[in-house]
Image (tube, rainbow, N blue to C red):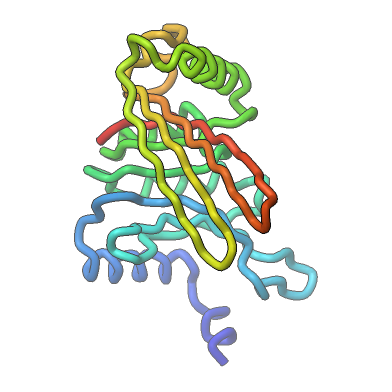
Length: 214
C-alpha cells in the first residue's frame, strides 16, 4: 500500500517538503554531519537496479538532513556534490570516507560554511604517500620538535579487545605547497591506528585523514 502511494508522488517535491519539515524540527544543524552511501535493501524493482542513496546524517541531532540518489555506488561522488549544495553547514564538521576525498568536495564543504575530515587512501595516491611518509618519519623520531596531540581509546566487548591510537598534527608546512594549497583551508593531518584482538588473534589497521579543525 505504502509503495503504491510513494510511486505516484513527485520525488523532488516530496524530498523538498521532507527537508523543510526536518529543518523545522531540527533547526540549524551543528556538530558532525556524516556523509555515507548505502544501497537500499529490498529496493530492487523488477528490471530496475537497487536504489543507492547518499545521506547526510547530523549525529548530534540523530536525524538525516537529506538524501541524494545515485545510479549505483560508482556514481556516488556526483550525489555527494549535489547533496552538499542543498545544505547549510556553518559550524559543522563534515566527515566522508575516501571516495569523498576530492579537492572539489573540500571546496564545496567550505563554501557551504563547514569544515571537513576526509579519509585519505590510494585514490589520492600522491597525497596518501606523502601523509604516510610524514607519520612514519615523525614516529621514528618520536615526534621530536613536532607539536602533536595523541589520544588512546580502548573498547572491550564480547571477547573483542580493540585499541585505537590517534595522533593529530596541526602544522602542515612540511607538505608540498601546491598539494597543500589544493585542499581548501587544510589545517591538520591525522592518523588512527587500530589494533583488534579476538581469541588471541591480533589484527592491525591504519587510517589517515585530512582534518580542518572547526
